[in-house]
Amino acid sequence: MTKEEIINPANLVYKKPTLMNDKPMHYCPGCSHGVVHKLVAEVIEEMGLEDKAVGISPVGCAVFIYNYIDIDWQEAAHGRAPALASAIKRLWPDRLVFTYQGDGDLACIGTAETIHALNRGENITIIFINNAIYGMTGGQMAPTTLLGMKTATSPYGRDVKLHGYPLKITEIAATLEGTAYVTRQSVETTAAIRKTKKAIRKAFENSMNEKGSNLVEIVSTCSSGWKMTPEAANKWMEENMFPYYPLGDLKDK
Image (cartoon, rainbow, N blue to C red; front, side):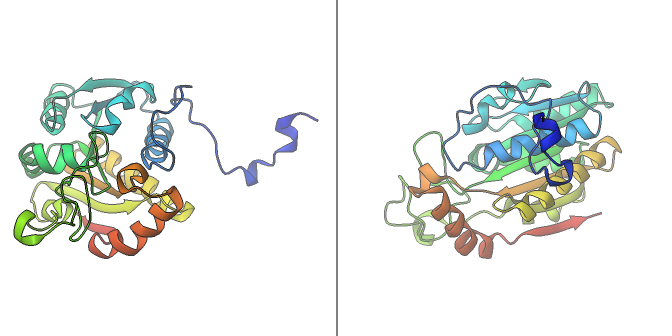
């Protein structure tokens, strides 16, 4: 019997999207980026937008996302992805335009670009990976780092008097007139992955139907930055990240 005859399609859990390039991932074991990459590729493929999708690559761990998903990409300066996405969508309004950004890129150096693009109601989607730390550059404190959380630049834990409070950028986005869909999801379980895929699909559909700007935050792990095993990182995220960054839709206009 062939492999195809042995496998029951009804039991098939994983299928590689044709848009995913066959290249080794550079991410650390347990990193959430690879899962989200697959979901983005699946949604684009299922929507039949392979030739109309334009992604904006960030600065940070996901800078090489263009190596993995076979669509058109543009590289943005640190934090400026929403501004570049706005320009591309205005020039080519029939394209699916989205950014893919981490918390340092989006919520720190890119705060202004993020807020103003969302508030203008640009017909783009911003995919926001929140792992509460600067992963690529050595594990420094990020705007989203939790209170008491230890990082390379807050070795005794984040202190309100020194560092202020963690920034809930998604809650801010939900208050803006220009946003159509704002949600916070995760990818640590099969059920969570399915919810996140639906959220990405809804955001992309809104973008194509000119309903306004969309923000999909995905609470994620950083095993290397947190100095934990992938299993321990998932548990820590559930126990510490989810209470401060609760999952679910914040706005659906």
